[in-house]
Image 1 (tube, rainbow, N blue to C red):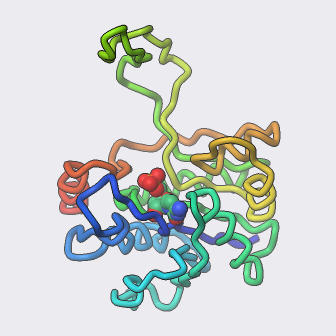
Image 2 (image 1 turned 180 degrees about the vertical axis):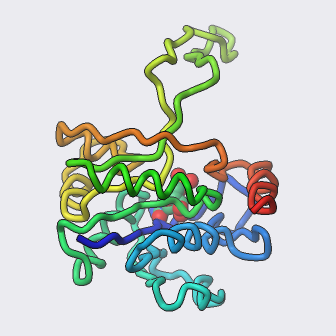
Length: 230
Ligand code: C5P
């Protein structure tokens, strides 16, 4: 069984820093997506499939030669992240066996440490289902609710002892993941939630805070500082 990676990078990323899709925002002299791909190429993946919007003209403007032909753009992104991953799996299926492992990783997580990736791959390769990088929640968690004046107030304090934050990569067998995403109901914001709908319980592999998701403008400076330490 081989190991592959797939990066959904077809979002328009409008929450952050203006008109440019966030996967192409400059970070340490490269587009953010480049760093996510580099991290994946640090483990033994055969190929990194990058799922792009059908009209993407930006990818071809950048230099991917550092990865020796292992990066394969697929211009089949969809309306949601889930659609982009599913379309990418279908497009990649000519090269990927249903039992091969697929690491799905957000372009918006450019700082995933090599040690986290290695731990995920080692633990999941020995697992019947697969799993995800995740972190136990350290902060106290509040449920919000608006009062009569429309002001956000604390409605309740949640028990955090069993709560983890899901990160990426998430590692599952390509065939099972495609089937899970195809059949999933409701909002599916990560691969694991589709697998869970099949009644399966993905493994939680402890990651680290360095693997932040770049979402807000200040996250870019944090990501640059993390990359500068390596
Ligand atoms: O918007 P968000 O940060 O949740 O996006 C997570 C990842 O999913 C990003 O890498 C983004 O490019 C990708 N995405 C996608 N297709 C979409 C929406 C998001 O590939 N339609």
